[in-house]
Image 1 (cartoon, rainbow, N blue to C red):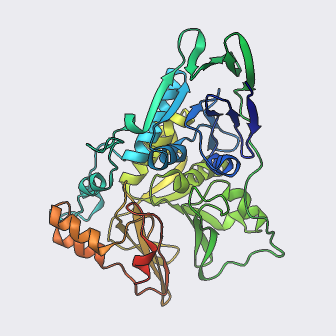
Image 2: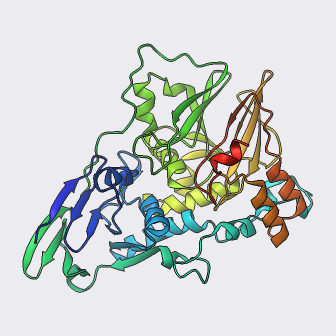
Image 3: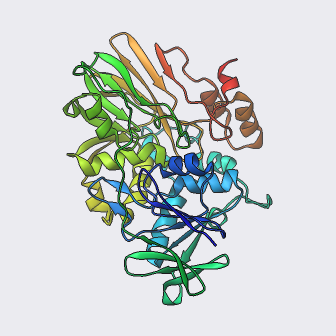
Length: 415
């Protein structure tokens, strides 16, 4: 009975056994490694000794995208093995990302006195987009997507016909009394993954423009995960930067001193992992988003980093945005709006010196779906019109496209 051990390029270890495949540790985007190697994603993950690397500012147990893949593609829950406290932390991160905040208080994010009918019912919209469980008879809960398995007596859990054993620093795959494989529970991170292209001269920021860091999804094995720099008055604003953006900036000879600001659209790992890393790696940054998104971000990562809420908040200067109310950043006029997505997500428009730009962020843009939501009573007429009337008039438009119902089908944008 053979067992194969594979070190992943981003960090972590893949173990292939006749019983099944498991992964030890999960730094961000290791799903791209396993999809290249296997064309698949393991359904069993073992949490390593440390869940977070303060040196690189990244999670070592990022199971969010493996959970998506297993649930939506393989139609099975992911299994997460670790100490009880580790399992609880991992599942709380997944819950925040997949199901969103338990409570919403959007009225504080709109101007005082805004009529209730002008404030979207995001809870109803999120519930509409929430997937059904595998049997199809109800909406999915966390336990349908991810199952926590604490280490049992003698630090042992069954794994099909075999078993997994935890020592102080290693994981063993055992068959009866035979140790078939033994790997470290201390994760060695691979080199930062970024473009092979190197800058030939220092970057000169435009007065108003965009530098694309990546345009791929969190599953795309051939493309850098999406994110970009918005330049306003020759100052940079990172928008949902992918992990290892700091290294990418160095490779492109872009002066990080030109970038003190970040916009966070929402709390899915392909959009917030790079923000977390920048908070840990560098000086305090200015973070622009709504209170709802910021609080979700803090809940998601404060336990992972081992910080309490107040300590986590001290990592950045928070500038809460008021929805639909213009604010100025580096002389540009920004207006933020909530999109239609599975968790609270904001897009934005910006105007500067006669030119303009709009970023849809992750969203489902589909007028037929908007009409369905209205007919079901999930949105009112104002919200249906607001979603339908996307601002297509801007000088430059960044609109996402992907697989519905969480993303916009390409054919809708081509009409």
